Length: 360
Ligand code: GDD
Ligand code: MG
Image (cartoon, rainbow, N blue to C red):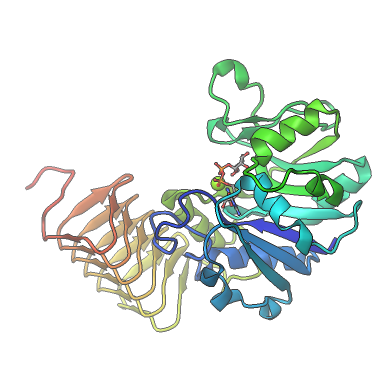
């Protein structure tokens, strides 16, 4: 097992790929572009060649990862002219693979943070002789995912992407976004048009009697597709709950990157990350949050489970709880932003403008 495909494109990804509102593979999680964690884990599992399948400019990735040699990888980039969907993206990079027809190829969704033992998925694939093997995890609400029931031996019996009706929800096992494909299955995906691996390839393979094998593994798993999940994932990386060889520092309650200035009596807890050259004022408390490079958190501010974009400014005594502040935005002093509020990039909120609680 030496090859992998990483899916890092899709609809909407052309829009502001670096802002905190649509967490993208290059937004830093625990100090390094999120993708670095996945690449480092793949390398640690023995993968040597990775093809990045993107539908937006490879220029976003290349300046940072280059040819991958710093990670001990050989990295290639393939950019789709129009998004080809997950299956189309996989097919589109087939010519870059070096594997033979019966060799296994790893494929990952690019927005997943997981502790999956990659080699156990490969081992399952080889032991069962499956055409495709899928990492499955259990969640309480499967509606945002691909539902994957299996029989007693772990063989997949159906694949239901984004199930909506109660009748469709027949299991709590979902597609965790990591697969092993036989190379020949990749070559059988149609070319030149969008294909969804979840809505077309998997159901089609099952209808044709192919062997899809599930590996249910309850290790750490998170889809980082929302800013809230991104903040959670970043904190879990720092705390060591989500394992990553790419963490730029020691595990612990906080990660403070080079050039950041933190007032002596400021409190940083819960896996908080303070980005390079950020400043945290006196008496501020920051818990389970990500403060990106160059941002400023004023004196006495209280920040919890929030994401503060690069260069953003948070005024004195302001409260952020479950909020997202875009790159370059400014939130004046004495504001209170809670649960799911998003301040767009470069916007300015004046002093004392927004509160949830009464105004005494
Ligand atoms: N290159 C490329 N081109 N990549 C794509 C495209 C495309 O057209 N469309 C999606 N991707 C990439 C995304 O960047 C992401 O890394 C991955 O494929 C999955 O796409 P999402 O858009 O994040 O899908 P999802 O989160 O709604 O659902 C998927 O992931 C779930 C687990 O998090 C599905 O695979 C579900 O079945 C699964 O449960
Ligand atoms: Mg996703």
